[in-house]
Image (tube, rainbow over all chains, first blue to last red; front, side, top):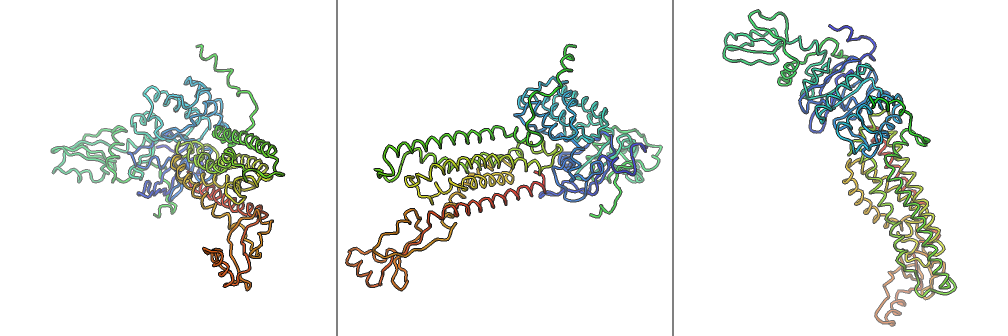
Length: 314
Length: 324
């Protein structure tokens, strides 16, 4: 489907590459055996229920969390190598900033701490939101503060931008502004974006790549355009009230029986029976079905899975 | 339309030379209030010490000291006690208000995440913080210690406390800077481990208070004591006037020692009988001489500085190994 998007050879073409990544806290594992690849230049949605390990994965990618096992590479550089630092920018859930700094000082901090700093771009983002440069960060509204945090992230000129529920505390107008800003900046620079979000509609609009986590494991990974058509929403008659036998060659993600009729979301393996009514599900339906069914084997589109080079031994 | 006009010409940097760059700028800016407070403590404290020394000098000159004896053996004015209390409290204040929140504040506010996701490593950031805080604390403490020593040394005989007392010993020479650095390092370490500002300040306060008590007990062990023997009825040699008594015995001619109170009986007759019975001829006096003070202070400062190095190395090692 997408040979252009699945570069081989040079590992620098992968924005993120995880092999057997795991993180165990005292209360139990947060991530287990996570392996995937994210091609450069994509906008990737990170989806999963609360406690699925999204923040842990982003934490590992931003050096805030140390993995217990496995490794993660950012454009081919191991994430614990300081050389990986200029390659990514991070915008956390609560967007911490120094409250007593002015906006100008916050941007100066970006300039002082980042070798590739782009002051013009950062100032443009701040100015386009009418945020006064001399205002103290502590006095700004939530939307304005998010804008400053965005400016700090984009001013770094990252190749990879990691966002942990960036819009969760914004009103709809500010959320729209930020999404537009994010998309235009990312497209203009070819920045790879990974954003976690609970807003499935938001993801559907913005993302062309998906990473679905549940219970600390990958459920689905790959092109949004390929993941959805791999599924079918079928409606048909169940012979003896049990459609499982009829659906056998396909992977059933979710199945509901009503009387003699069943409706199922399946992953197609070969042709579907002509007796069934087949529809293409929406992205939201596919995601919800997978989040409800943690035992279905994970689905990777071609290229999204890392080769098991002895790192899957656990 | 009118808003676009203002956009173009304002991109140049604010005027003024950039004295500091990179992490130094960030640390100085973030901790500006704390660094300026320390500077104020240094300046005002210095003025105060110089003023108090002048006051004491004027008072003693007016009293004709040292030619004439003072009415009271020591100058018990309130301000001397206040200076000693303030200097004695400085290490604790530094530990609680400078050390404990230094990194714990960033951990609690999330700004540690902000800084460490820029392009500098945690280790460099924390090391820069250490450098700024240690330098400021060191300069402040050295200046105050030098001024207090300069005041105390010539007038020590009228000070209400002996040289070996914590209120003098800990505030003069190399001891004050060493104590300030050690306590600051302890505060920083507790902060990094506790990760919460208020909790680390409380723990640091308890630690610093306990460490102060333990340290005062340590002072007499900082140098080997000396022992002198002199005849039972003679006065103590005058060069021991400024010495610190560690222990005291009475001894017989064959070198046998008895407790000081052995022969303090109700009547003089009984005492004399007791002295005769045990053959006691000598006073034996174990002491630390005033000339031992610099060696004791440098030994103490060495121990504290070694502690500072250990704590600093531990924090840097931990920060480099695991996220904040």
